[in-house]
Length: 387
Length: 134
Image (cartoon, rainbow over all chains, first blue to last red; front, side, top):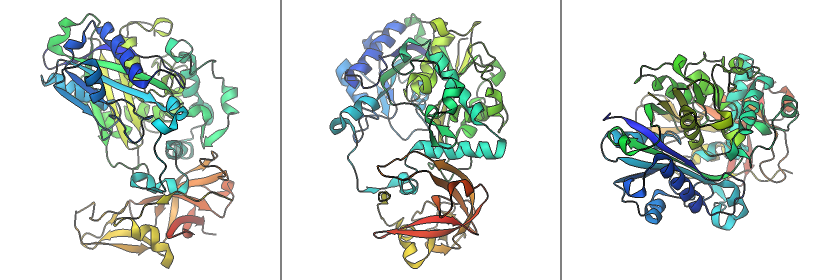
């Protein structure tokens, strides 16, 4: 059991839009829930990992850092990490896995807290200062009003329309599937209030073709916590441990417009290199859907289908439904359950593999899941197994 | 009337790109040793790490590699719809520019269209926009 890493606890705060509760308290709520889930106490925690660390210049994006948690929870931490310069959100969990495999830590709290809705209600405290100029990578897009990632993802999606014949009706299935699943997710009540129909989707206003309003996730306030434990420490845990069977990440160039294909097409194949599992063994996938086109890139990048075939696979939505051959985003994804920014996918994968997903539990006894994060030039994926 | 475009902060690496339009030049960093281009511009060649580089005017023509019609007004008063495109520059392999395609109705802009640069000045910045070659 040594040299293995397991997810042993998961927790999630209330998820809402403009929650009055302070984001540090939301984080503590999620930590307590994850500890309770694992049957661990704070004095057993010896590491804290996060993406992207506290964003001092834009607190709505990331209001809580690893230092904050170490301080207010009285954690005796041996190693911590919170950084934006990682392949993508879930790479914080991958790094925690390496830390416990290496014997540096035994039980690590990994978290992602967002306050992007509440922060807009309190701009002086949470929003970035307005600058007269743009610099860094945004100077290559913002001057042309490609100010949102929606416009960047739209150009990849548009290529699928032009080159492979993807239709809006096909793309719609990501958001429709997400809304159906979100209706059965108690944590998604503030985000999804009714099922999305194809008619409603097709008549929604366009944001950046082919993406419409329902193809873009919504700012929310929440904290999600994942506890990662060492293989030789799981006898201290009461919940069913879920093994982190493989990890992968990729950044080729940190640029949205100089890369030919998004990083999912690199991180995807890499996920299978250190495991005997193959796509056919996977019981459910939780794919980053900050924009609806991204799960299609993961379906193709991970090899579930050939490049240029993802939209055909999701057509009609039956294959990706909870009772389909490859249930996708069973908690609703970010489109249905809010912009939890990556960690929601690991949370739901673990919940499904443990059979604890209540009304939205997929049939059978799922044993293998994939959770992914990122889009464009950045990607990170986790292969999770109950074995 | 559109609001002013977000303005790049000029520095040693990007100045030639954003101000070249004053002389009608679309400047891209080229390596004098290996002959390859580096974009976004850097003070060294990203292919061979040579410091013997210089911004050099390129043809200023290209092809629409991918595009989207943007309908969302991201700033107050921004007129929509308009085309955001990724242009593959002629003679500059591996370099793309995100830009706007102007002077054509959005429904007449397509993948594979041949385009050429046209600069829009705002203070000291010359934004390289593109228009269809008729």
